[in-house]
Figure 1 (cartoon, rainbow, N blue to C red):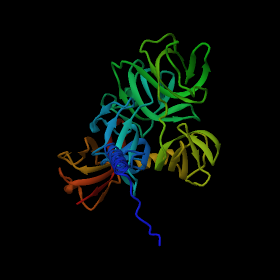
Figure 2: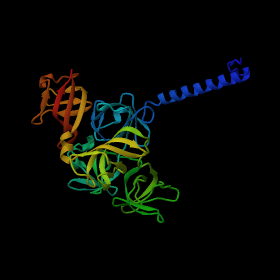
Figure 3: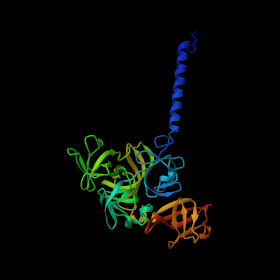
Figure 4: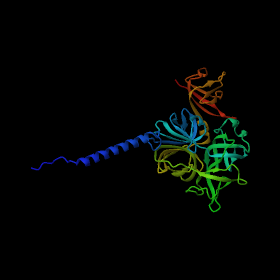
Length: 398
């Protein structure tokens, strides 16, 4: 009777197999450790992403999502490390996070970047022109301290930095924040190519003409209708003509992400089921569209997931100007100081007025406004002072 014996490897072969298994296990452990050391960013164990203006702090609020930024890396548009204190209301940002659950998530990276930096050419009744780019301001635009008076404080020749969203229907940016940038070493524009002459190496964005030399390489997807980011010399090459020092990345490539939220304007519209927001393709064939009609230039918030660079939308919400103003800004945290007459308080470094008619107080009174008391404040930009907010509602927290 034949008896099956256990398979026996020669001693040398068995040793080699054990060694190979140990190498495989070590490599797997190293890969896991490497992912863990990346801070939980998108594509590295995290599944959240949001793009839009900062509308609140406590930690960072973007598109009504509260991101805990206590462990996040903060970067500028070039990827240089910055601090949390550099983040300001109205800045346009990208936030990479872990899973967004019940309107909150833990941010791994916050990157802020502006649309235009350069000298003001002219000022109108509702905005101004910078480097050939029309910029509109409204009651939701936040200004920094040197421009506290808002539009009346802006004059031709000033160098400003504009954060905002591009409105293709009116060929202009809608400013969410405006800052002075005296002494800028380079000017910048992120916009849509209107005209392109590759033979003459010139392009037009807005009303300005930009030229680039043989040593400056344009992006591979260079074409009219595409977004570009330009770094410019501060000395003009002629009337309304500027020299490109280099091309930047107009739109970052993103991996597949489970939950995304984008706020911007419709920049191209094939149909209600297929359009672009800030240049990114949206598949809205299965989305619920609410609060208005989708038209070119409409301001929208799109949520869904990202697949192969396409936003597969689950909801598309059209945001009117009135809805934006009524939404306002939100600040959360302990009160830092209170005016003696209780007409204002400071929260997250921002002065908030308390004299607006109809101010609502939840779970407390004005007498309860003391330093250290935790509150949540919903507010709008103060008319005539773009650095302050006027509270609409104050909610007292334990």
